[in-house]
Image 1: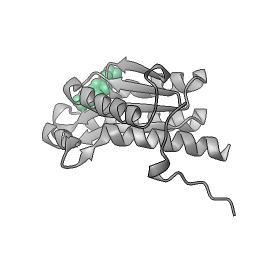
Image 2: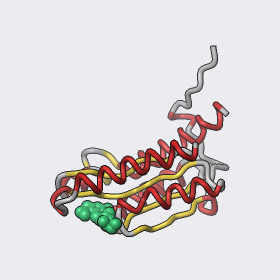
Image 3: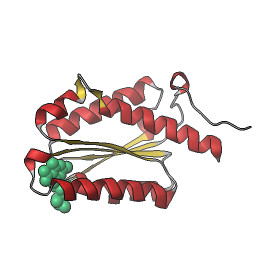
Length: 157
Ligand code: INI
């Protein structure tokens, strides 16, 4: 029986090349997502030089740039970071749906892991809880998920 599983203690990112796409909308939150994500990559051995960060206007624009990075063939995983806040928009569901489906499609179309580090929350307080507050740090979690998926897909291939 072949089992592919990368335990958290073995999530070493050295040698991995990572793309990060981050949305400017709700920048105070997304900057924190990015900071946590980059700090986790650093702790896990991913070199700065192996990380390419791309800023896009909003969460709706994440999928296209994620797919472009994944298609180039120069990264082992892409992390998408954004913050969609229900109170900020009447079209929350459309932006959230577009980002979610688009990010999933980018991964399935390219075979490169594309990680969903997008907050979909009712208000700013819920967002703050998720950037190092009582609900953890979704930027750090996204980085860990990227490393696990990059190592897992390499292991299966
Ligand atoms: N983009 C976000 O990233 N978060 C939001 O909360 C948001 N709201 O509230 O509308 C948002 N809208 C912009 C959207 O992502 C696109 O940039 C825009 O529609 C242009 O395509």
